[in-house]
Length: 123
Length: 387
Image 1: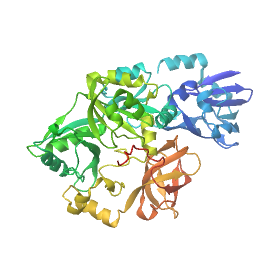
Image 2: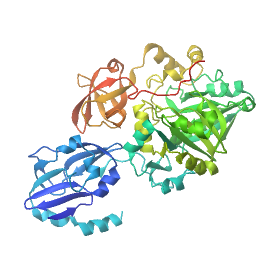
Image 3: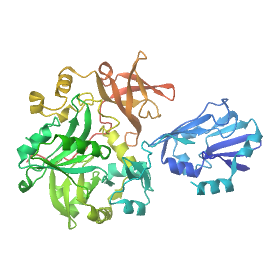
Image 4: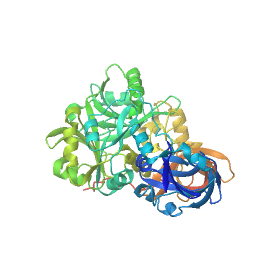
């Protein structure tokens, strides 16, 4: 499974037509302790760049954007009661949502892990 | 992912406190705050730091705050000079006593909130020690300079650091390092040495917990902080937890909960207006402030408990049951000890009673909330038993 990253620190893991979306370890470390998460409704149509979820730390609220277009196929409902999962395992158990990919061509505009690591070095 | 701004993002030449090197050594994340590079958190994170302070003792660097002295020929002269600018009773302030007060505008707004100490040492009488907010130093010092009488001088202490040791075990730490401090009453001050370092120690704070604020020469600050951090009960705490602690304690943050457009009566700070001053007036804005205290202000600062888990941040609209906009959230977030979202804000007086249902508009959606009494977490200030 290929994993892609955005400059806004979301990650996308592609398995066939389904993309799992979360925030990167760098993103969670910048946020600090996550205390609240708001997930989209299953079935919601998201265009690339739309607000897909909201994540709040003690300090501040941040939006999570849809890295690619698609329809929300599933959400990680367990995060609502255990938002700390996002800090503990941001790139695995702390996933946010799954999308039915609308256009695989959009993946070409994202970074692979090597490119994302190089991008983090520039911050 | 996009961050909402962390308040103050101006980068232009930030000042550092005398503890900047220590913060970096401790792995702090530094952020701009009121013109200073300040630690927002250490590697353990805000939740852990918050809980540590509620359970043990947290050490805060608050050296960005303004420390200054008003120096006059005798106590009455200096106290009267300060009373001309504030609604506090300082003529009646005892030796070694501290009082919270406000600089008020002629329109009854708040220029800043501050702590005023009369030294315990009668030999230093005629001097009052002021601690003002970092972001208001320039305004406050100009205000004082322009308004003090000729025989009272403003002396800004540029070369001092300020540490706060806060939490239920703070007194046990002080008992080992400075026994004289451990028996101090709340809102009193002494001069004493901590591990051989001369300090001005107050029993006061901004967390709702028992604790001490310690003013020390800048060049001794790191030695003092390191000495305190060597105690097993003590951990360094950043501005992030300082904010969640003070919000749970229902304490105002200048520029957010109070400002020049807010009166002390609206802000529910009537306790800061001395009995004699209520009777006699004679402070800036007394007309408005005293009539609001007598008749009730048109709006009031209240505690707000959102239902559910979503925090309501500063700037959130507050609507009453009829859907009318009645005010804004001025501080809001997550209270780790409260165990959920908490906020403070201003509502019209007829919606200020505890239990009143409110609607908050969070990201365009209505969120049910209600007015609750402040503080969210009970204060645990040290009370000396009368004996």
